[in-house]
Image 1 (cartoon, helix red, strand yellow):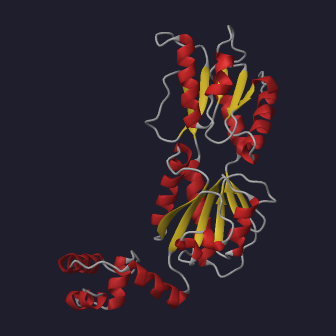
Image 2 (image 1 turned 90 degrees about the horizontal axis):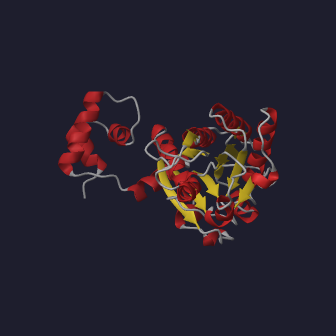
Image 3 (image 1 turned 180 degrees about the horizontal axis):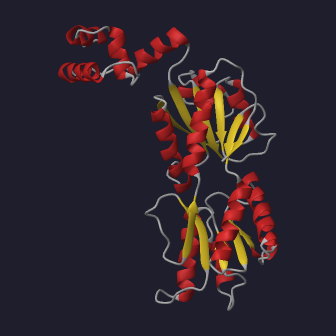
Length: 328
């Protein structure tokens, strides 16, 4: 097997210099970097990451691995896919390694966790999804630096850092967009109404609508029956009415907004132009609905970068970190 010593000898540099080049650290000239990488290609040298993890952890107590842990949800969900793009960018910016860990939500002790978490092969965690008290308690017991991404009750977050969307700011942006497009009667759809973020968002939408003197009431708040339950069952009876009680439907989850758009197309026909607007957040620029819609920034990119920055800052500091809540 080709070793790092072999690369260093051929490139006529120290082993430490080879390590710096391969780990993307500064302080090595472009000429030296180019020569080291050329030798690596010639010798077909690659780092043994298992050994590197052990060496790094033995040397300074770190592995430079960060785990993105998603509980009870799918990485393929557009809401989390967009978040992951930002996480990946942040991880690369700080030169850490990223591992994706999906938990089904039934984990109750350390031995239920995958080896990456169970064996302490990560320095810290970014956590999101359908979190319950037992999950957060388990993460606290692991004594691993953790940042929770998303809105959860303060009691649930006890002792952990958290980065969340500023729902009040988001609600006012949405209501202002509705007003700008001539909408006066608002409706809101939430697929999973039982969670903390849904309750916050409902409150702030009602507050913003009242401040701008737009029509919004409890009768125009429609809900699904839980995660991934969709909009069809709840909204089909509403869209079969002769007159809709709203001219703007707010649905921040793009996946669910596509269902509402399909129902709207079925009501008006493909050749007609619906006189109703959907306000949603598009995770990617090339995503668009087939009916009139306004797309607001979903905030996932900033949310992800802020979360990674907070976690890396905690990992690189020797101070003990109190619970901190950051809104973006």
